[in-house]
Length: 243
Ligand code: PTJ
Image 1 (cartoon, rainbow, N blue to C red):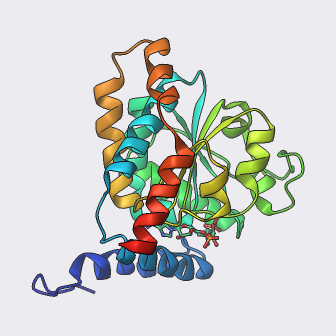
Image 2: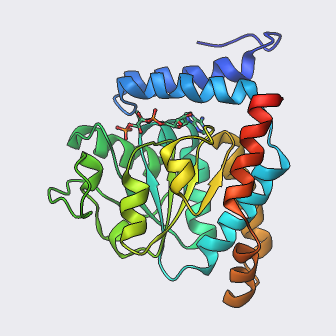
């Protein structure tokens, strides 16, 4: 459906339709539509804009991916529906591997999401058809990780909540989250949390990664080290409560 350019909520409605179209194509889970609604509510409260805290988190996140030996980007139905092209670009700029990882996992959805990423320009996509639970202590289907995430030292997870971040950290990995809810378990447990809409956060990460990619590992680590996630989350929470 085409929303008229004059509609005051055009951007928000266009994003909704990306989700509903992707749901009809079997990419997004039905619960993904509800998850999007929760994100919309937080985005509305934040004024649907990128705050400086989110910009700082995006810079630190790009530095962390660039500094990693084996970075990986985990992709679910919602992130593929909203940002497939940007995910492909970020993977290329940072050297990260892409892996499909789903909560409502079916082989059919894994293949569809892989195909969306390939059509958007990704080179290789991991995570399709893994049958083994490979993340210790994680009981959901998200435990079926492929080599990209298993071998990674830094993982970007987007639009998911639950206990995976804790388990990935228990495996010694650094975790970056994109989540509009600063109070979610994933947002709270990640090393770097970008409290922003994925459609704004990923272009910011790409821009930062392009600016930072000339730096050496030590300089990149210094950028990461200067970032305080706890304070950043608290400031974003305050914005929501008092804004
Ligand atoms: O594709 P699958 O099978 O892996 O399923 C994915 C969903 C999204 C259904 C699943 O991970 C889920 O239920 O997620 P939650 O627990 O609802 O968490 C999603 C989080 O993402 C919430 O904290 C939302 O506020 C946040 N969120 C939703 N849309 C956006 C967002 N954050 C950033 N940008 C968005 N556009």
